[in-house]
Image (cartoon, rainbow, N blue to C red; front, side):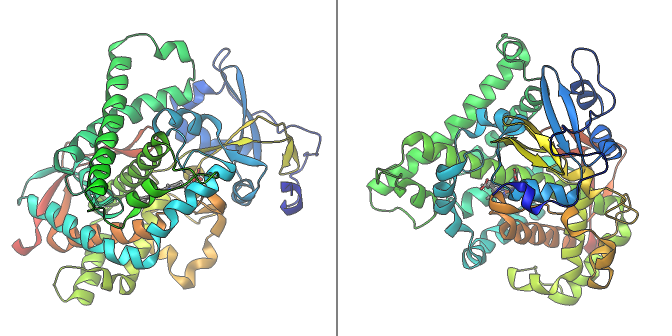
Length: 462
Ligand code: HEM
């Protein structure tokens, strides 16, 4: 099947033999890489004015940006486009050939291996860990303290994914190492994605040395975790969990999968599970601090559902405002702001010709703030997700966990974790911006507030 069969009507001026129109702007050598380096969010959001699909020059390479939500859904569901392009090529250094970066039969097998760990009944089990970790984080804080929310929630999200999905209990010092290493690696990866000029990154500069050492530490950490589990398996105490399933996985020839593949699978899960949840949570806390009226509504909903006891997994279905608040937070301040694909064959998109081998990119952030898809897109308004207001929203424009065969397997897991951590904290603490808080976006592979330093005030104080 080609994408042609499911395409909406071509945009004016588009023809099946025609390439998408070039995007405006671009510098002589760097092309649009210059715009992406200078103001990526503004640049990507402005592209929609140039058409539904536009052509970009990124240094010596040509790429295509898809700006229309329905076309993005077509792109994600079409077998003509693979996981690839600048983001995933760059992430390959970290993720190797795990489930997030592989394609075709390898991806199908790897996805089958991890999927059972994300069934709803398993999430119910993981919730105990989520509740424990949320309460431990909230209990560490003291009244009037300024908390580095980014660091705190990263640590908590790392511990949750390690203790639940992978059942690694001895994570204490490793959660901090992992957090520090990932931070450095993600910064370096962003630069490498925008300017993919290999020799630049082989120079032994301080920044490159820091990157190499953080990357090596990350891989070492994962090797340690796997080695411990293999030792446990050898002594007959292997828990029945995802890591056990990965170690027991077989390839298409019925042979045990090799060490490297187990490693890459674990890295993919830890990185996706820690980074995306942590950044999403940091934004949610930042938004609550900026909008005390919404914090009060959330607090009131929690009180009416739990009657003051700690929030638990069983309460989540009744927390409708919480769900809308998380959804709105992911819309206006998404962690995942750019995603890329690779055209596997000569194909078409939106009526335009897309040559095989082309890089494709799209920005969930740009779509989620598109005024054609959302009324008052820059207003933080959790009530826009009320069923009676659903007509205001273009559904394809907001898919924080993506769609198609690469849809995030951790979607229900994440929604439970986000709600349990937010609920636990909001029941006890009021988060207040300080003079040091800076809620503007810091750009990296994912987005995060520049400085989520928030003062916590105990609610019991009145
Ligand atoms: C709020 C938190 C999260 C967000 C916003 C998020 C978002 C996403 C998105 C957008 C994709 C698709 C990427 C693409 O289409 O190129 C994805 C894939 C993936 N996510 Fe998540 N994710 C989150 C949490 C998690 C968690 C908790 C886990 C696991 C513990 C996880 C594991 C994965 C994996 C393994 C993939 C690759 C799936 C594949 O390619 O088949 N994610 N995620």
